[in-house]
Structures are given as structure tokens and as C-alpha cells.
Image (cartoon, rainbow, N blue to C red; front, side, top):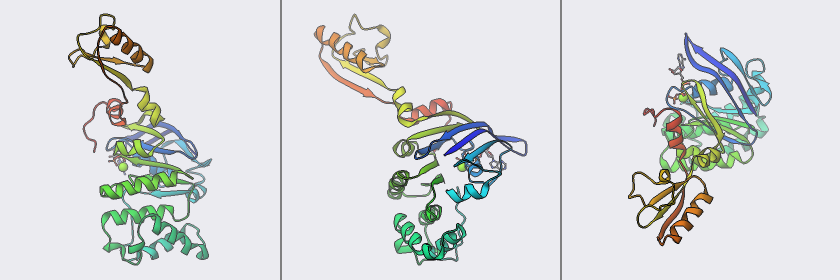
Length: 298
Ligand SMILES: Nc1ncnc2c1ncn2[C@@H]1O[C@H](COP(=O)(O)OP(=O)(O)OP(=O)(O)O)[C@@H](O)[C@H]1O
Ligand SMILES: [Mg+2]
């Protein structure tokens, strides 16, 4: 659905993106992760034809974002980082205006508005002036706008920014629902959220892609098994398997088979096996590793 090849963007001599390449397969929900200033918004703006790259190319649905911008715009719904809205319009007026701009016929517009207003939980506010909405409600109008022409690809720049925890959960569910029949690329700082809603993640750091994988592959690859038994270290357990911070009765194994083997060794040696568990690393700790432990993350 998306192919990005060697995308480079320079702002007045500053290189914000440096030969960024990644792909997004049709039907996946992909999280685009990175610290403040990593280049997420820059990439998403190029993908949504908001601005051209300095070098490299991006294709969306097979169309080039520079030469075939019209075709690209037709198939994407884009939620920008700060949503520009007309405060003096009512929610449904604004959505009708946006739907018509995006080529939805007058006859189809009402049903399209009803659908997105209900999906984005704006039914009670549909006759309100946009300037009288809360920040989170305005964010939901932005999401409704991105959805109103039923696009095949949704590009969402921090969709849950400014939402309360309840609404965040709602939007997470909405994204999962939307991801069932379309492709979604979303940027976020909230790593557990990416872990929950995204099948794949792309991590960008200072304009470079530093990781790109299925979310489970990334987390599983770094997992380990832990066997906790009573008593002193086992004579036949490799020394470096012992967890240095404990009282030397816990053994760290890299595979389930190793852990099972060590459990039998412990039992044969007359020890009590207190725990055998699998510890998967969180996306957050992997992220901190690949971006070098930077602390400027929300
Ligand atoms: N219009 C611009 N002119 C000059 N520099 C810019 C411009 N837009 C972005 N930059 C710079 O490019 C880099 C990447 O910015 P970008 O907005 O893509 O980051 P981001 O990953 O979206 O960050 P955040 O998480 O804070 O939204 C930053 O160093 C930023 O200062
Ligand atoms: Mg940004």
C-alpha cells in the first residue's frame, strides 16, 4: 500500500529525513514511532502530498506522491498533527463541506456524515459550533473528517493526542475496527498504545529508520524464560544463566526448551521449582534501546 524509498527531506540545510525506506502492506495497522523531532510528521506530510521530498520517492496505492497527488489524495484520509478547523461552522456543516470537497456526492453525503458522527461519538455535538468544542472533541472531528470519504488508507498523526484516557481507549478500539477493512499508518508517542493497536511498527530516530518489524516479532525476539527455584545455584546450570541481581536461585533461559530442561535439573537436585515464566520485553524497552535511551519521550 505504501512504498517509501530513500526519502530525504532538508529544511533550509537541516536534514530532517535521511534516506528513509519502509513499506506498509495493504490491510495492516502500522505504528510510526519516534522521539520528538525524529521526523514522523515530516514523513506523514510527504505521504499525504502536503509537501514534496528533497530526494527519494514515496508511492501510495501505486501512485507517486509528487506526480500523482490527485490520485493519492483520493485514496487517503489524513489527520494532521494540529487539526485546522473552521470554528464558526457547526460539526455537521463542516463534515458536509469536507465530504463534498473530497468528492462525496450530495446524495451520499448525509449517510457518510451520519456514519462518521456516530463512529467518532459526536452525535450529541453535531449541531454545535466547532469553536465551542473541547480539544478532544475537536480531535474527534478531525478523525471524522479523515474518514468521511471512506478512504482505503488512513494516515493519522498522533490520533490520541489531547484525549482523556477513556477517549484514548475509544479511539484505540476505533482504530482496531477501522483496521479490519483498510490500511492505517499512525504516529504515536504512547508505546503501549502502539503495542495494543498496531500489527507492525516502524521506529524512526533522527531521520533514520532504526527498526521495522511485526510488533510481536520485535517483542518475542527479545523475550526470555525465567525459572525460579529454592536453594543454592545448581551445579550443572551454566554460571552465566544465573540472574545476577537475585539470590542466585533464578535462572534466565532464552528458550522454552532450555527452561524446561533446567526445571528437570532443579527437580532432580531436590529443589522446589517456585516459578517458570515467560518474560516478553515491552515495545517501550526495545524502543529505548534502539533510540539510545533518550529521555525526551512522553
Ligand atoms: N517547516 C520546518 N522548517 C524547518 N525545520 C523543520 C520544519 N518542520 C520540521 N522541522 C524539523 O525537522 C525535524 C523533524 O520534525 P517532525 O515534525 O517531522 O518531527 P516529529 O517526529 O513529528 O516530532 P513530534 O513527535 O514532536 O511531533 C525537527 O528537528 C524539526 O525541528
Ligand atoms: Mg510530529
